[in-house]
Image (cartoon, rainbow, N blue to C red; front, side, top):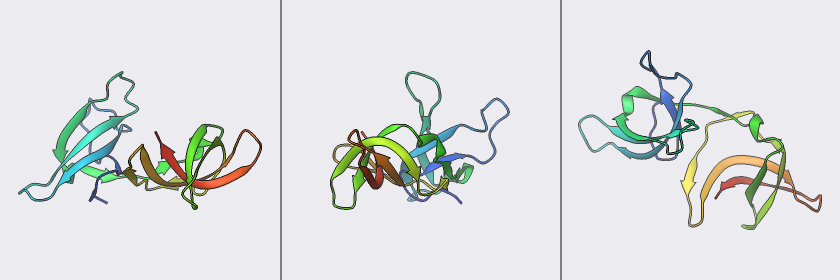
Length: 132
């Protein structure tokens, strides 16, 4: 599936031989109002202190599923259904793989990744991953 909105996680469907085929990117902007639609993408986990951004043709990209199991045991913030937030360690993920949607909020980035966490008092909370 080709990207169609900002916040999607993508990779190149046919990377060049000198490129890492496992490199992931987030779509920062997408423009369909031109002859050849383009997307501004930013590298994720590239191992460099400053991630690079590039404008590329949308047709070169594909939306990918992201594995969520790596979140188990990590300290995160979640947005709960009652609009409050909780901080704690991830004990359960709702889906092992997911097409992540990222939405820029006022104080961070909201996601569609549903998690169960345990706070420092031992209380469980369920909600969507929130990245500050």
